[in-house]
Image 1 (tube, helix red, strand yellow):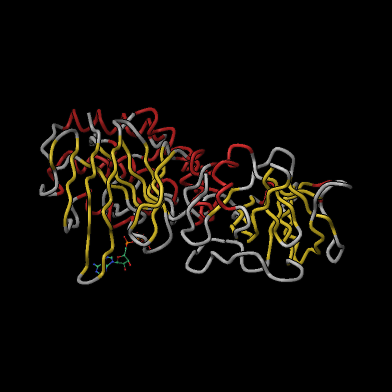
Image 2 (tube, rainbow, N blue to C red; image 1 turned 60 degrees about the horizontal axis):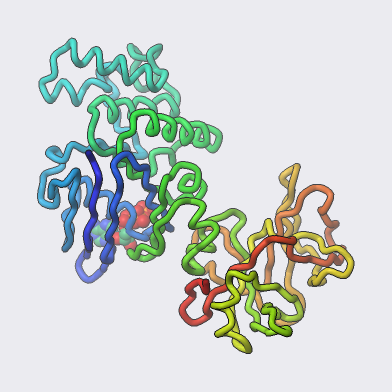
Length: 380
Ligand code: ATP
């Protein structure tokens, strides 16, 4: 069993507190992704798990064993980094078998394990080649081969796909996910890319400034973000945020956002009732917006930019009158709604012309998210 317990982990570099009180339980066989913007502490957490950095305080248990003070080589962990660190003078076979050889495995055992790993990764044809005669994707597979051949109890992967081009990244992320499901080894994977996190993880740990913001399945994070940061980080294009006031219309609650009336769903009504007459921040996913039918509540807007993706378009609208969109981007590296702009994800029939005034509405059955403007926490 390789379940992992991370208990109140902290790391300071001098006066700088890079990791703040991280606690997490990972089940045996789980694929967990640490995600967040640059500098949020995800690599620091991974390095502490690997034993490459010492924790300032806190404890790590792997399979019930306290490994907090154990040397990296004694933790039975394999790491895969973005720079594959293959030995250029060794063949693929020798690269994959290197760790086993160092540990004194017999030639027969090394051959068998290398063969098995090579088959799993479909690199048997390249076993006698040297790394320079491989493509980036093939090299990344060799690096993975070197990790899986050791049959460790835990894989740690730090942005292993960031040196690959976009198409190969998509292919390799599917391959890594499928491989992990097949061999069932507990895996922690670090990335700043929310799409990678969403597509690969059983559970995502989303971090900001050294603090875990939320832990949950991709669906939980997407549908029930705990705060504005998570809501803006997960999903692409990012969620739109609009300031508004909660109003009570004969018992049914809605948000009045500068004349745009947004209904509040029944499941949020009890929590939202404490905000009647007060300001609130509304989160609307770009895919929840559509061109409104006549008679439907809508906002009259003019597209400021149309990004066409062929079958759909990301249409940017500058908000009329007072600016009530909220800037949450700031420190985020990813796209996020900037002040005064809404983004709608519209399909072919719905695509407006540049310069044409359109009526933008909320799709039926789509829900708005509500956030407290002071705490930025979700109201639910
Ligand atoms: P990235 O995606 O850019 O690698 P990250 O989330 O992995 O970011 P970390 O590498 O964990 O971030 O770094 C977290 C913070 O700790 C950063 O602000 C970084 O500058 C700081 N930091 C990391 N290592 C050290 C160090 N050895 N000395 C001082 N500060 C450090």
